Image 1 (spheres, rainbow over the protein chains, first blue to last red):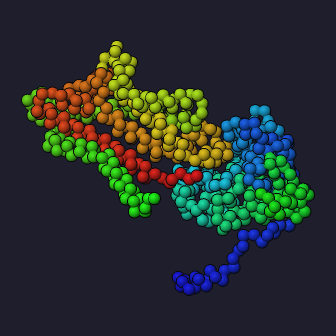
Image 2: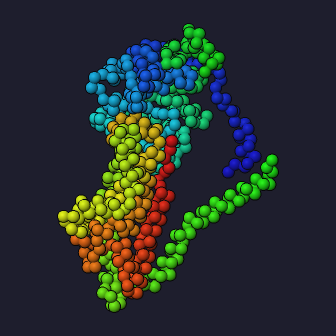
Length: 288
Length: 281
């Protein structure tokens, strides 16, 4: 047992991690620049009714790397992300023009089922969305229940669940309570559970839509570390409001403004030597 | 200028009025319960639940057949009302803006406000006119009353499921129908069960739709094709009779009926409370 004065001393002496030492950009990984393209968009335009939310976006997201999409509110970041797994079209009146290829296959091709596309592309949202009636185990297994070709995912269900929770950095915290309700977890744990749920089917691409927007700084840090570790095994596209976050965890960054892709470069270059004046204005905080 | 003091006075007066209104709202129930217990409790005995009705003058008659009949009618009504009501509610919640949804929503509100005797006439026309009084006809009439109640509560409960859960399921590759059933319906099951129990409590005491469908029966019957006894009918027949003994039995029957309704209502409360995990948004 710690005496209260001791606790106070400990807390006082623990170095405080300041959220971001302004724009500490990671070393660029040369491998990424040579990486194969994983997700490619061609002249992608997405409408809500008659209003385009993104216009003619052509971009290449490299395989097994983290790509961040930044930009002010309402610039179409989330819409772009939601076009990559055909979630955009679930909104009434929404439609897509142009094309998206994942590993060489068009996901908007004729006869392509959006459901099949979504099974290969994981997605995590702003707020944690564990299924409240399911246990932690059932939540992780939720995607497996609908996976095509179950045989393609090796291992028993228990092994897959453990692996997914390990990859999401949650295993140690939940391994003794897998059958408890998922809503009993903290917000940060719920979000990592959602990441585990998305990883369980071993998608090639993981889409993160502001995954730390509703989390406290400590949980945010854990999710960021997790994304940093995932980069070697899965292609991550992350939408974020937070430029420091983009700088900390991404290899490449896309800057979107009013639905247009203004600049898309390696994270280091985009944040240190932006080519477009609008990018510079945004990252130096002159607007947005 | 109004002073603080006068504002406090007005505020206090208004609060007192709301207390009064709240008390008035529960007063009838309290009075009915007191009255029923006072008049009916003395006639309640084991024999009331086990014996058949007896002719006037013979002591010790009961309502065993009416109690069984009411339970059977509720069962038939549930078999019709729950699947149709929950299915329609699911449709209204998931396809909110189709013309059919608007029509169904409007018409179920109309049906909800329809006098129950009209529903009885409908069932008579449909099932009794050519085939005679039957338990089935009574159950269909009660089931028709349940449908709009269950539909609207199901719809409301499903709408409390945050859209983010639907999106999460769709993003995992769930088909729409599977999302609706495995996620949306499953998440709001407790609320839907509550709605179903409230609907059952509501129809359990209905008399008018049974008058010319189930009709009532002084004999023991559990046949779907025969007229069947029901508590509300028996209470009605006994209370308008001229015999003191029957009046006492009617009071006892009313007490049993209202106890049944209260138990179902309390069960509904309990189901809501013991909900497994609140929905997150």
